Amino acid sequence: MNLAELAAFLRSRRDRVRPSDVGLPTGPRRRVPGLRREEVAQLAGLSADYYTELERGGDVQPSAQVLAALARALRLGGDERDHLFHLADRPVPTVARGSNAHAQPALLGLLDRLTTTPAQIITDLHETLVQNELAAALVGRAPTRRGAAGSFVHRWFTDPGSRTVYPTEDHQQHSRAFVADLRAVAARRGRDTEVAGMVADLRRRSEEFAALWDIHDVALRRTDHKRIVHPTLGVVEVDCHTLFSEDGRQRLLWFSAPPGTEGAAQLELLSVIGTQDMTADDETTPAC
View (cartoon, rainbow, N blue to C red):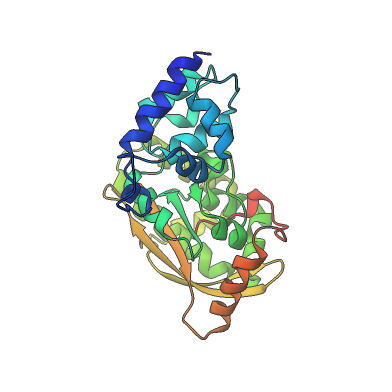
């Protein structure tokens, strides 16, 4: 592990990120052009002392999870993230490559500003890339796996347990919406082997998917009114909004409810409950 180079690289990337890029105030007393050490630590979910030791070249051994969190906090591109893993003498995750491996910086900047509403970034194949704490509290922690195993659409049609997040009477509606959305994504991507492989696998494993696919409905999933089954709050009615990235490969989702409704009250309570009462595992996490 090259501790000196790792420290220098972290300092250089921290200096490059402006507070406004991550939704932080830029007051007149700020002494540095980029982020403070404690701000990077907060964004990455680390203690300020731990991150300070990293930047000082101290004898610390950051895990792959810590490195991934730092890459998100510092808005590293794909090559920069790989470099960070190399400096820390950690294997570069296979998901670190490819257009959907990282949440795009523009969407991350918006996600950082959504501190009072559940929000997350997903790929066009419904793999959750990053989520805030309120989203984790509402729908569960995101899966760590990528590819088909990480796609909620794929799990929806291959794992009955994934459907418990929605009331049974709503399942047919979600099935139709997922398939119509996937067909639109397939058309957008053109001759894409990833989508083609997922469609072929789902047609083989799910009669329901095959029947819906043959209907040829097409509709990107933009805004939904949905009911989410929460283990403590019961059924929570929310509106799910979607903002697409410029290339259409990623989506920022956020959940809201009209003021004065039961759903709004439940979301307010969610910020108090947090994730402490979540019993659903990451295999049931929906991506809207």
